[in-house]
Image (cartoon, rainbow, N blue to C red; front, side, top):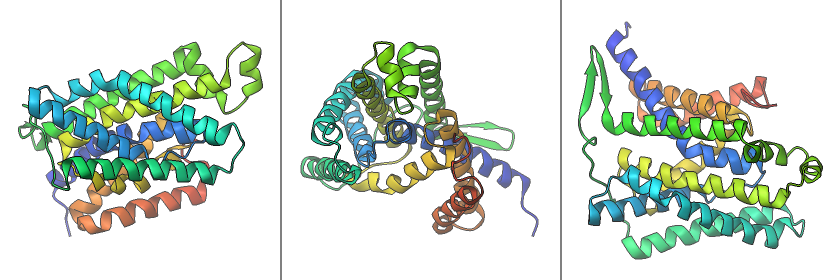
Length: 291
C-alpha cells in the first residue's frame, strides 16, 4: 500500500515536536538519575505541580503559562534544594540502600498527587493562550502552535543547560561529581553542595515542563504517572548523564510514537517505542551516547 507523502511528512514533523516536549520532561531525570544516581520517581509529579501553578496564575491573572514557569524557576530551585537536603541527611549521608531513597520519592509522588486531588479534584484543567488552537501551514506541513511553541521553549531550555554544564565551573563540577568526588575536593569544591545544586536545577526544569504539558493537553493530578516509564526510558536510551543523548533519545521516541499512531493506531505506540528501546539496548547497553 502506498503511503501518502504529505501524511508521512506531517507524521515526522509531529514526532519531532513531540520529541522536543519529551526532552523537556526528561531533562530533569537525566540530571538527577543520569548524573547524580538519584532515582527521583517523583519528578513527573512535580511537573504536574508546575502545570497547576501555571493553571492558577493563567486563570486568575491571565499571565502566559510559559512566563509563569520562568518566574517560578527560583521557587522550584529552592524546593529542589530542600528536597535534596532531606534526602541527603535521611539516606545518602547514612549510606542507606538506594531502594529506600526510591521509597522516599515514591512517597513524595503520592503526597503531591493526593494534595492536588484534594485541592483541585480530578477534573481536567487547561490554560488559555493565543497560540493554543491556531496552526501554521507551510505547503503540505501543518504546524500546530500548541506543539511548536513548547518545542521551541524546550530546545532553548536544552541549549541553556548544555552551555551551563559545559562552559561554567559549576556545570563541569556537576558533570564530574559522580565520577571523582576526591578530585572535586582537591579544587575546594564540596560534592554535597554540588549535588544539591544539580538536584535543584533538575527540579527547576519541572516548572517549565509543567507549563509546556498543560499547553499541549489538559491535565489532572494522575497524568504524571503516564510519563514515569517514558522519562526513564528516554534517559537510558540516550545514555545516562548525556544531555544531548536525552534530546536525541526523546526525538527518536517521539518520531516512533508519531509514526506508529499515524499508521497503526495510538494503542500500539507505547509497545513499539519500548520495543525499539530494548532493541537499541541489546546492541548498545550504555545507550546511544553513554560512556
